[in-house]
Image 1 (cartoon, rainbow, N blue to C red):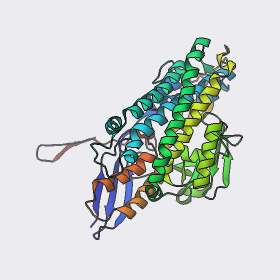
Image 2: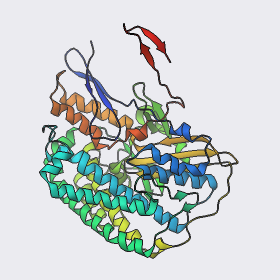
Image 3: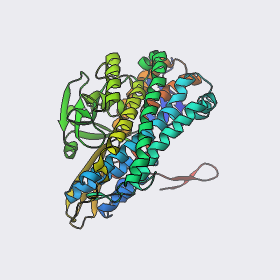
Image 4: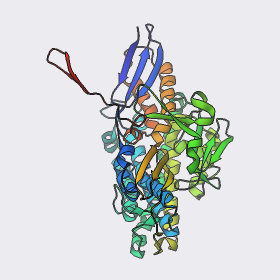
Length: 470
């Protein structure tokens, strides 16, 4: 008889999730899986809407990474109109992206991931949370809040709002930066670089302390995918590179060609799809996207401090690094990179240019926008008719790309650490740590299954008899 352990809800993530572990009669783990039961309908919501509205609409998918959807949607809309953003608009969008990374990565490290490492996986849950971090180290908590605030202020300056930006439109952006804006933001970005260095100084000794857990939890060797530009780490624009388990480049392809290489599998136990590398098939085509994937696929980072950190990381863990909990380390390298890049962009006088938008004309077309969201590669794909109305939309988010790897990592971890039907809370928390490493956003990841919304409502009478099913 199959026995089950359920971890519900998984804590300190964006959205709602449950982990189910199956055990046989001898309490040996036979399977473990991630259940995502949220349903979103944004792909359907977009149909019939003017395509220029998409960048504003899709920000509502998620309150944590609205910039990611705004920018991916904007790039897809550019494609539908057959234009590219002006150079100044490109820089402003990229700066908005850096603000998003500063905001999101600092939030995840300090408030969602850090409690497991600051207090230990077996610590009392009453302490192992953001409030425990604040109580234990108020100065650190204050720095974390200020770091996140810098990211939000950069987003607000470029996106019009700190949450749910509205400025990107076909061929460009509505809002430029003045000299006063740059004078205000540039010192903040320079301070963000200091905060990024501080975060790595804090974290690296802690990662060394928990190296055994890092090596044990979430084992899921895989290929990795991410954007690169001339071999450099790239977060806004570039080509997609698929890196093999052995570190060789399997394929590098343009964003518009993604359907030739990526297909989606539907699990029976989840509303979240599971993409895979199409040429290798479902069984062998598992890949991951993430901060770890991005620093695996790139040859180098084009900002000096982050490049130095990448070299130290690769000396310790090789390329490609596969240990799932190293996502946290990679995330901090990217956080430093985004801070440095913000300084670089704000130091360029061209960012105050006045040419913000290309003229556009509606047409029947397909537009694909691919960027790197904080959690990994994000794809928006729209078809329009001759009036510029959306006929079809497809969205593949980072968390979905990682779906198969999360399930495999859970199973491998459960088989190592669960030996009883009533495991200790610390053991269950280690299972949650596997999921938290990916910084998943299930609000983004669940949309429709095969184009349908398979919701079932059952109403039972007072004696438990089914009286209505819809």
